Image (cartoon, rainbow, N blue to C red; front, side, top):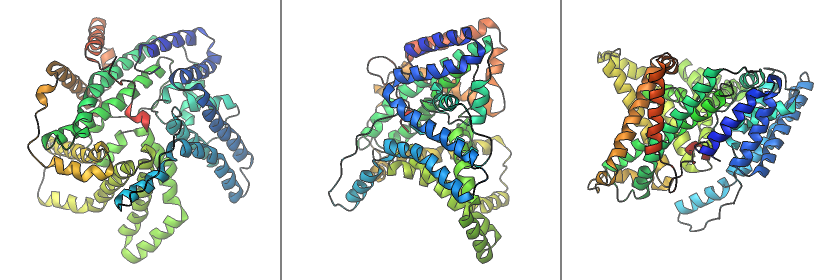
Length: 504
């Protein structure tokens, strides 16, 4: 069962009905049962044992950390390490075990050795990248004394495997989910209505836009030696649209599904394509991962004794500004390398989602003052629409350059892809595309961008839509459903179930 299927909609309708028919105090138990059922339908149910093992480690470890809260720091660090080790160990085995043969094979090809190892065949545990980080965050919060551990292990289990978050997140925090999952919810028609409304919007993003663009992107980069120049540029722009519509569409579906139970999940996107700079872009893209990484990786690194000493030493030798920047640059490098690795056990992701973002952000930090001085000297009007448009386009193009590395078949193929992008004489594929479907896809993309722009400007679009007349609202929703049914990429020959971030 996938979240873009009619089976999922049937599952959701039935579970919502029984959820509100049961006494409010035990509804969280129903959610746990639903999550187990979803895991069974969407994956191999036997693999739930790995989720249970991770939860048991988190539960027992946090109870020990709380019990020995006044013990020596060294002892508590040992308990912390032993608590996180099973969760990290399973994540490593199921996701990163192939980093060793990949590394060997990469350098073997690089130096022309002609020797390679086969990849390990590993199981795919549903949601392991997401619930592992949620559990590690919970453990660290208890270790730091942010809140006491949960006494009921079943509540920790529901926090980890609440089924809407298993596909592609968002990465959740326990205090927020404790309030949402375990506070009795009353039946609210608006929650159910707006939940299904948002699911419909997510279906449109995924099926009408992302999955219509996916085959075109695959065709271009699958034969990048043939498609050159304009089409390589077009392909990476289409991929940027595809990945945003795919991931944000998935978030709309899972957030909408959760809202039908009265449970609000944290938002993962906030109009990223209108960002004025790259820092703002990453604050608006995959928000839950960015916040998790800052709170549990970057800030602890900045506060660590080695980086504090390095900062003091650099400040004494090279001045206050450099002494302040150096620990930040190092911590950002470690942060982005880990984020790149989180996306996959591949040098391609480490480079594209790790090194390049670090280079972007470090460069902007280093050259921020000189660029501001140059802008002021040239008397550039930074308060006008044209400058803000320039900033957004510049940010988008820099992200497209990053995504070009993702689109290339392999990291070693990137120079060849760049060479093709700078060449001419490509074949014409525009005439091969179904024109009416292209028009509808572009139209729907325009609708999403208009809604994103209003959100960027501070308008609560959903609330504004709810204030419209009933006939207008239902007309829009029926029109949207019609577009999905007619122009959505589903059925035989399509892989609508495959979410890009579901593989990370």
